[in-house]
Image 1 (cartoon, rainbow, N blue to C red):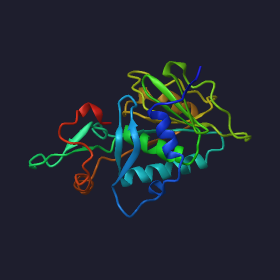
Image 2 (image 1 turned 90 degrees about the vertical axis):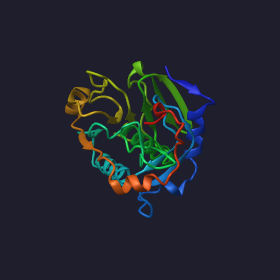
Image 3 (image 1 turned 120 degrees about the vertical axis):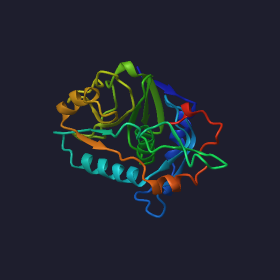
Length: 241
């Protein structure tokens, strides 16, 4: 059973991003990476905070996923976004010898899903974001929540078309199993995962989805990213994605 969230950070996030925001127009080639303010503290588990850095890899991955979905006629669907261990490391302090240190959020898979959520909500898409404990459904300007254990059933149907699955952004640590996705699920899943096939291969083989990878930060991006004071030194590393 979905529960409507009348107030709270997710509702504030939804209302903020359903307004026009030119800063998220694709592609933004004028400044890479660039800072993106989220309008509120995003308190997923783990929490993301109120701002992220958007790298060129994020922009390219977003556009690639749009292309894959656009080519999907119902025979294949979904994607796994993975990367080398450390791609989503919690935080990076750079340079270590600087007199004034700044925490910068790494270009991780969790942060990428947050960027995807911004793009989809601002485009008025129906999207579900799944964390280890809770699922958030963004639907027609409202937010609904329920336990992740409820799975991917009882979701809104498409707007009068034969094939319009719900975007599903999945950021969950399933340890030694994959999420409960089957070909009949009314979702178009994008799972952020480690490179362990046991965490995604069962559903990916069923749906014929794509396996994509995010690269590590380049040295140039680290240098540019250091200019953004996203987190002071006192910030807990546990608060980064």
